[in-house]
Figure 1: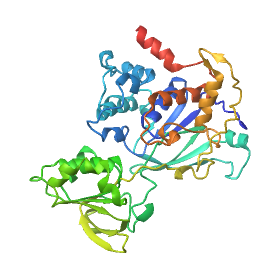
Figure 2 (figure 1 turned 90 degrees about the vertical axis):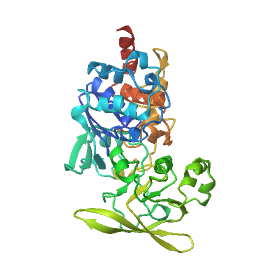
Figure 3 (figure 1 turned 30 degrees about the horizontal axis):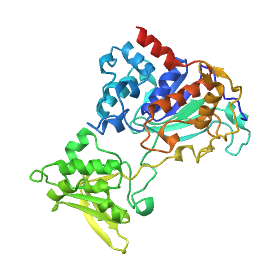
Figure 4 (figure 1 turned 45 degrees about the vertical axis):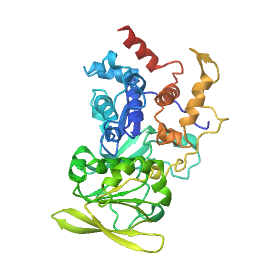
Length: 416
């Protein structure tokens, strides 16, 4: 490695993404004395809570960490031990664990929700500077934006990218391009599953769903679940794959779909050509005129109350374009983090820690990628693997190869 990975506390770690991975990184860092700044573009736990009654892929004990459970117990909000082997719903997991952690004394002052990271760069070193150690010694400059607080600049010594997969890079036009009139902040235009409040408002209105993702399927199911004699709206579902109607995912909705055949339509198209506000009331628009583009050069106009753009998720590297991670160039298998040599330690070799560290490091010194964004799998909730990523990160940053805070706090919790 061409740079020294050790960063002793006190130092500042900026965390992009406030999901499970980001919050666990923040906890581990705070227990070790690091300062943290955590940014999430939406509310904490929002993506999990949107799935309402869908069960988690594992029980409470596997989906949480000893650090998280200890932090909640200190707040008087711990998960009772007789529930550890129970499988919570995703909404329950978001409310009782993720949101509770974000509000804990350890994190509450450092979590910035509804705060989107626009750009991450270096403070003084030019983009083209090839000296890795010089880049390593320079601070990161994080530009973020909040709808209510405006833009702010934060400095950090380390950046942990746990932003996961998102719909952000994909436009509504053909082949993922932008549609004319596409404005991500426009009222009635959504890029994720609706909240409870939004769902109550829109579920019996004229909806347009674009995309073939699990989220698109879930929203269509919720709309179709409304009894036909109560459903007052229409549903237009835009997909790009002509064979989607024959897919197992769509066929699972056939019974519900048949009850709304007069009000629901599945359209195979190229995308949306143009979005036009149909009418306005004060500062908020209430309807959309949408020009849908088809492969035979046909343009079909439709009018809807709300549009939900829910394509298959992708990776967003746009906010770190000035760094060496626009496409993550992870360390080669021959590179080893400085100062770590193979050798046994408490049942695990230093070589294993080094290997795990290499898997999350990028060619940009002190820019690390953890979680599902690192595994290139949007459905990857491998909690045990991510815990190992977090542990190896701080083992190297603090030159504490033998320290495992998870094991330390697991022992304390079980003995108390």
